[in-house]
Image (cartoon, rainbow, N blue to C red; front, side, top):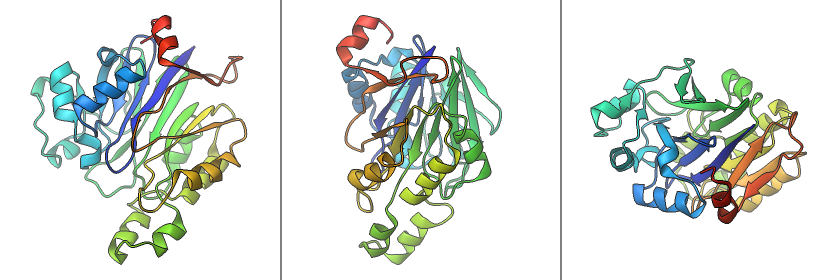
Length: 277
């Protein structure tokens, strides 16, 4: 049994993450245009018609920018809290809007989405774990500091998108004004490379096969710094950079404890032949 995961885009210019099984999928956030989302998904063999819901983490533009058109064009239901919707200025079709509450799982076909609260400077911000086929995939970005709930959920994941937003030295010596540096590094800002690594080393499951380093800052981090830091501590976990410029490949996540192959990913040609998408 397996799930398929990919980052469509990750960064302050837009965030969108895909998790699905062979017949259905969800998107977490829709922060790039509908056209670009569709184009990127098609490039890696993903079918937008398999997407049965979009879950919104919070109202910042890089998480909702493409939502209105994407939902309307493909008639995709949007799961969003009342607080986030009220502060978003989104104009969504009413019959496609559904609410969710923290710690109350939502069933989307054979997928189960677990929302929980996170620390971020937004009205009602949430993180998510998508469960299916005996696997759990976490989407953990835009977090000021790790909390107990994050540690618990991360420790159960077979794959995760984890924020590694900034290198502490680059942020402190960089050109950002003091107030912005404090906002980024504060308890309602973003996770640093070090905070993310500490969470990874302290709470990763032996079954964590893939870790996507996500929401890297363009100004205060580099893929090389983040990747080098995690790769040397990765063990049996594959480390992937979720880029702010393009999509990742689709990764096929298995349960390490039951499957012989745990590090499969497919080229678009292989995916089309498999008829999974």
